[in-house]
Structures are given as structure tokens and as C-alpha cells.
Amino acid sequence: MRLSPRLLRPLSALLLLLVAVGLYQGRRAFIRSFFADGEVRVAGAPRGSATDAEIAPVERLRVVLIDGLGAAHAEALPNLSERCAEGVELRVDVGFPTVSLPVQHVLWTGRTQQESGILYRIPALAEPPVDALPRFVSARAVAESHPAIVHSFGFDVAEPPLVAGDPEALPPGWREGFPARAAAAVAGDERLVFVHILRVDEAGHTAGGASPEYAAAAAEADAILGDLVGAGEADAGSTRWLVLADHGHRPDGGHGGPEPAIRVVRACVFGAGTAPASGSTIDATLSDIARLLGGSVGVGPSPGAAGRPWSEVVAGDPAAQLPSPSLGRWIAAALVGLGILAAALVAAGRRLRWAPLAWPTLAYVGVVAGVGWPTLSNPAIYPPVGAAILGAAWPGWIAAVLTLFIARRHLSSVRAAVAVAGGGWALVAGTALLAGVGDGPPLQPIWSAAASTAMILAWPVTAAAAVVAAMPTSASASREPG
Image (cartoon, rainbow, N blue to C red; front, top):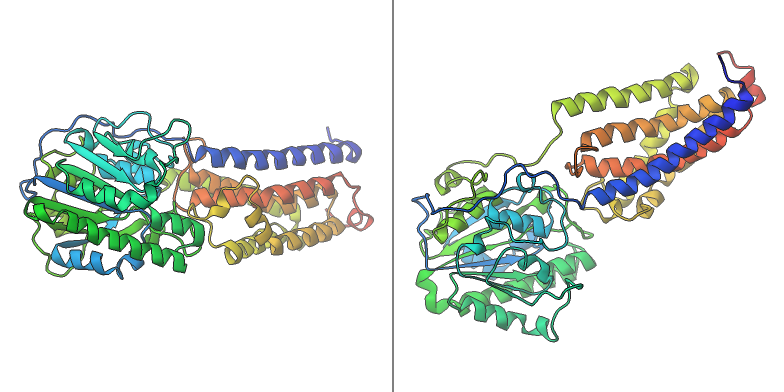
């Protein structure tokens, strides 16, 4: 039984409108799911004694993390470079996502973001991980701001205090007094002291990684590092230092994605029991560094953690730790995406085979030119309506309107709507399957951002297609064969 055109058109228009609303609301739910922690693959467990003979424990371990400091800027810092020359310089892959609290979770437990399930987390952890290194030794942390992070990992003393209901609140005068408080902690008796410098990250978010403000903040952080090392000079013979970053920044600000300039940071180990390297920079993962820290205070690695013994770190390249879609995901994405595209091409007919492809291509070109290649480091991914991406995709919107107008002259209204909108649906289906939608937080490098972008591009065209589907078929299309 075939529906009459009078009934088919409004039903098709209603269905297309529902699809457009579903794409719009689905993307918002998709973005919200980024901030949900995922499945735990390697559970935390209490840690035993260190087993790496080549890592000699020391009396004092001092860790300085300069939040948001990209490797390129780190190379130009004089104090940091001087310390790297005294010890071992490393290129450290912090893993994905490149977000501060999840990255520090790797630093203190040795378990990667994918192993722990701590992915795109912003608020403090409800309880410190059972295998967090600060729980096994006397430990103190001093943070310049964002105290929720240092209060997540079981330090005996964590400053500044965490204010209930306002995780970013700071005591009066804290920022001005931070360098002195950090220096006092370094000179203290705790075996592990952690100093978290955040001014570089704050400048990156405010002005971008290519800004003068970012460079100035990096220079200030380097000066603080010099003062911290000086504060620990009295115990230099028994103190080992690690200086590192947790991620870099995009030139216009932002982080979170897998880009090497953001994910791979400069780090240096120097001080007691650290022989200067031969001048070469060692590649390591953050899990490797976590194992080094544990060994430095006589604590073994977390059971099941991916960190390698120091001898293996020095000897060879680390294995890649970026998650990637499985072969099954690739096959499913190809079959579903190409299947939808094929249906759109059939609807378009031989004359208009370009209709499903033209506007998505031009829209994506506009997005890349306007806001950059879609990445989880790009703030344009996150706003509820994706206004920056919608604006940048203007070449695609013009192409979509023209294509709908042309298609309606040659095809029935419903076929024209499906032919044009189908290209966007194919893009959504393929990228969403690669991102892992439905399998927990869909945080896949590249594909999560691509799926979000595809949904932003698809819903307005689908809504416009619904309007076209409701229109009577044009007289010229009625005369077209097939």
C-alpha cells in the first residue's frame, strides 16, 4: 500500500523534524557524557615495596608541575633548562584526555586514563584512589589555585583549603603568598612535596598559548622554580626533583585533545641519585614517571599499571597509549555510514549524485578554516548550540539551501529532502560509531570531536529538509522520469 502524496509529505516532514530535534538534543547529551567517568579496566589496589633496583630511594622527593606549559615554551625557560642539563631530560606522553585532574590521576597512581576510567573529570574525586602515592608516605601539596585537584589524592596536608560548594575559592592573599608557601613546603620535612603552579594554564585559557600573557606566565613560573630549588638547597644531597607539565595549550587556548603539541610535555629529573644523561632526551609515558616516583620513595607500582622499569624507559621507546576504535567499530562505521550515503545517492538520482556530498564538504571546510580541525582541545566543541561551528560552516549552509532548491526542481519534495540531508546523516552515523557512542563516555581522539561537529552540521539541514518535504512537488519535478 502506497501513501498518497498528500499524506506522505506531512508525515515525512514530521519525521525529518523529529530527526533534527533528535540530532540537536542528542549532541547536547553527547557532550554531557564527556564529563562522566568511564569503565575501570585496572582497579586500584594497595601498593607494596619498590622492586626496581635501578631506582634508589631518596629521603626527599620534590615534584613541581607547571600546569599547561607546552614543550615549545618549556624549551626556552632558563631555570628549567639548567636543571634538565644537570639530570635527565624526558619527553613525556601524558595520555588522553589531556585534562589536569585525570592526568594527575595517572601521575599518582600509574594507571592511564583508560585503565582507571577517570577521563574528562573536572570536580574533585570523592575519595583518594587507594593506590595514590601520597597515601603511602608523608606528603604535602601546595597549589596556586584550583585546590580541588590536590585535595583528590590523599596528601596529609593540601593547601589551600577546599571550600565546600566553591571548589575554586581561595583564601584572601593566597595567590600573592603562594610562592613563599610553596618554598616553605619544599624546605619542610615531608618525604613527598608537590607544588602545583597554575598561572600558565590560566593564561592559556584566557589569552591562548601563543599570547604574550602566556609567555610571561611561563617566565614567572620558571622564576618560581628557581626559588623552589633554592629553598631546598640545604637538603640537596638527599633530594630528588621532578619538574613536568600536564599538557600544553592550543595557540588560541584550550586543551583536552590528543595533539602531540599538547599531549607530549618536557620533563626533567635531577638531584640525588640521578646521573646526568648523555645529552639525549628520553621518551617516556606518564605511567613510567609514576613508577619512577614510587621507586624514589620506596613504594612499588600499582598492581596492573602500565609503567615500565627505569631500565626499559632508558632503553627504548614507549608503546602508544592513545585509545583507538576497534576493527569492529571501523567495519560498523563504514557499513552504516556508507549505507546511509548510498540511500541518499539513490534518492538523488544520477543527475544529482553530488547533492548529498556538496554541502557537508563545504561546511567542514568552513569549520576547519574558521575554528580549526575538530578536536576536544577546541572550545567550539562544547557550547550547547555550537555557535562558533554553526557560524564557521556558512559555505555549507549556502550550498545546502541551493542544493535543496535545485533538487526540488528535479525530484519529489520528499526525495529532495532525503537526498540532501542524507549526506549529513551518513557523517553523523560514521563518526558516532567510531567515537563509541553507547559504550560509556565516548572519548576517542579525533572521533568524539568529529561526531559532535557532524551533529551540529546535520541538524539545521535536516530541519530545512523538513520544510522542503512538506511542500508540494514542483511541476518541473513531476515531469521528470523516475
